[in-house]
Every structure is written in C-alpha cells, then in structure tokens.
Length: 587
Image 1: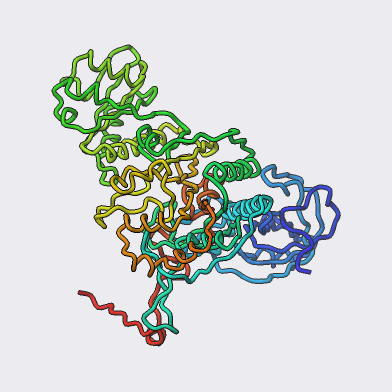
Image 2: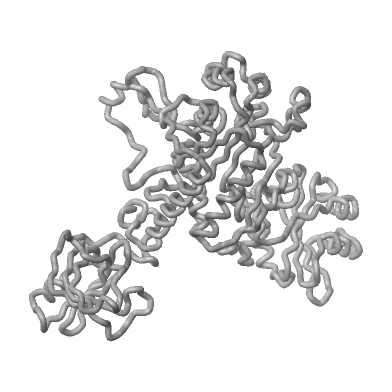
C-alpha cells in the first residue's frame, strides 16, 4: 500500500494514528535540528517533520529532498504548535518515521504554486507540471463535476448518450474542416466533425427521440481566447418538440448547473431578446447584461442640427452614457479615443460630452453645436450631472454598432462592472436565416443549411430571403455565447428550396448531403436541437478569461501544441503510403 491517507484529509481527530502518505515535495526547509517538508498531492498539502534527535540519518535524507521529488512517508499524526489557518490540514503535522524516495526530480522550470513565476508559453510546454498547480487542477475538477451533473440531468429527462463517428465526410458549409487522408482510399479524405449535426438528425429519423453526447468537435478557424481547434460540445437533439420545449428544458439544465456549481439561483424565466433588438441596443448578438450603458441613437438630435460634417454625413450616430465619469481627464479621453481607433475596432474617431457635476458642459464638438443641442443630447441619453457621453458615428450602421459595442465593453472593464461572480443569462431568438458573405459573394446560412425558417416568413424565401427569420436560439451568459441551436427542417421540399437559395445544385446537394436527403424520405419527425460549449460553460463557472485553463492539454493561440510539438512534419514513408506529395520549397 503506497498510502493510507491523502494529503488533504487528516485532522486533529486523527492525532496518534500511524499513517502513510505519498505525493510531491512542495518545499523543504531546515530549521535547527529539524527539517520541515510540505507534501502535496491532488487533495491538499500536509506538513512533514523530520527530527534530527529522533533519527539523524532520516533527517539528513529529508534535508536533501528537492522540489517535486515524489516520495512516500510513514509517520504519526501530531498536533501542530504553530497552526496554519490557510490549510485544511493546518492543525496537524506528521512526525516522520520512514522516508522512501519514489522518484527524484530535476528543478522544475517554474514554481508549482497558484502564483507561479511561469509565463503562458513555458507552462503550456510543461503542461503536465502546470496541472499539478491547485488552481489549474480545480478547473479540471470543476469540468468533471459539471459533466457528471449534465449527464445525470439529461438521463433524468430520458436522453440517451450515443457516440457518433470522428472520421466523417467533409461538408464545406461553415468553418473549415480538418481533413484526414485515407491510406486505404488513395486521394480521398475523411474530415473531422465540426459538430455531429447531420448524424444527430439521422438519430432522430432512427427514432432515438432524445439524444445527447459530450462530443469532440474540430474547426480549422482563427483562434482567440474562447476558441480552440478542438473543443467539446454538450450536443443534444430532440424529436416532436417546438422551440419553447427546447428552450424550457435547457434553461432548466442551466438553472440546475448554476445552483449546484455556484449556488446561484437563475430567474424563474430567462429573458428572451430578438436578434434585431440585441443589435440595436447593444451592437452584439451576445449582449453582456451585467451593466447598463445601452446604446441611444442620436440621429434626430445631431444630424443636421450643427455644422459638424462627420455627423451630418453619417448613416448612424449612437452613444453610451458612462455614469459618474465626467471627471475623466484629457489623457483618459485620449486613451479611449486611441482604443476605438485601433485596427481591431476600426472607428475613425470619438466624440465626448462631459456633463460636469457643477452643471457645466464640455465637449469635443462644442464649436459645432449650440448649448441647446447639447442639452437635448443630455435629455435623450438620460444623462445626469457628472456623467460622460461617448459617441460614435459611421456610414454603415451595423459596423458602427459593433464598434460602439466594443467601446461599451471596454468601459465596463475600466469601471469594474463585468463582475465574474455575477451571472446574467438570456436567450437570443429570431436570428436572420441568411447572411451575406463578401468572400463567397452569396447568401450563406447564418447557422447551417438545416435550420427551419420561421413559418410566418416562408413566403419571403422566393423574393426576399434576406428578410427571413430563423427558428434559432442562442443561450448567452455574461456576453458569451454558451450554446445555440434551432428547429430543423424535416420537410424534403423545404430543404431542397433551402439548398437552392444557398446556391447548391441538385447534384452538389446530393453529393454532400444525399444520405440525409434520402433519410428524409422515410418519415422524418419534427426535431430540434441545441449544443452548449462545455469549455466555455466551465470557464464562466470558474471565472476564467480563457477556455485554455479548463482544458487539460490545450493548444496555444497559433493552434500549436507546444508540449507535443504538433502539428509537425511526418516521415516520407508515411507520405508515400498515403500517396501524398508535400512541397515545402519556398517561392
């Protein structure tokens, strides 16, 4: 037996017991004729005491222990004289009688502590050491707990877990596929699934009326803090349901998770907001409702009412009211202006109006507008004395709203209004069914080609498809899209029309989706689904800034696994077997 107890469970009630612990040396320190060692395992830290007067050889060996040595120790539980209130085991220590070094360690490249001295790159390279840190380990334990809660909840709702294939056919609609060459079929390729979308629809046709899967998904797309090339979905599908059925069930699941994991009671019914309303009020289809600063349109107030040509020529003028910030200095205002002019935001400039606490008004456009117009701005914005109004304008309304959204979030961060311990959830509904792609120069499905149009809008499909709303819904929490789904098309003729609008020929549609089209001929039930991003959900619950910290072995921002050094080249023998030719010569 390597251990009788873990390093996190012994208490005063265990005093006098002889125990055996095993773990890693957090730190060792010699004080007079005694050596103290903090021993760590997954469950906590226990202090070991080696006394020179009891066993000088044992104490000498203990004094030579280095950080991260893996050791086994047998000793007697004893009450500590100087207790450590910061440790659950801080009332006791182990008077060591035996020491067995199981494995020595070289000096680790960073400290294995919560406040480590290791940067992101070095910690990702030695991720197996990073995972020893309690803060990282707790994220993985939270992920495990959430997965168990999700499985149990869905099981209680008669869902059945079904695994779908990882090697599937390529479906170029949507993000880029990762492809896998087939040795047995030279010149042909599998794709890794972006989601199990078509497969779970086939399960509905098969009569599995409630399916779920904790599914690995893969997308070859640009990365950011909440994206990885491989990620995990809580993937679900249901038959004989409408939109309200799906929303109600998964709202209950979210409510269950928040209560069990964070002790937070979500409202009895979450708000639903249409896509158009979200864009108008917040410039985003995933609005952060933890704070105000809603957009106020100022076209009627500022366009044509002064000599400021930028506003007079604008298609959209909108502002946010930042409460209590009229005392911002010129330096602070310049910083905000520089922020919105960054390429990532793309605004050409920023107009501010300071409604000072003493009732005076100071603005960057004072000379273009009368005091009466600025007073009208104050009234329209709902501003009070002491507030700061920030205004953006542009010749593209949607683009300007997105810029104003970025500014709003920046101000929320600056003022500390985006509290990670506060949770505001809602559903976004009535998305556009199609969106225009400048790259493809055609309409694309906003979600995917199988999304049901709003029945009220089906007559618009022939002449005005861009006006058609989708029976789609996103679950948003704290400005993050955590999940989304839709009702699916189950009528073959409507699906054919959808493919036609998207520019698919009949031959191309059959080549890519023939298996699904043919399956629809055999009594497809009405069905709908939803997928939550497990990584994102865990990161919100854990209060993390990046999903990488709740994934055991993540990729970096370039999509590389710096620990495994992947992706990498492969042997010529493998390339020959796959009948692939790789040309790495530079042009």
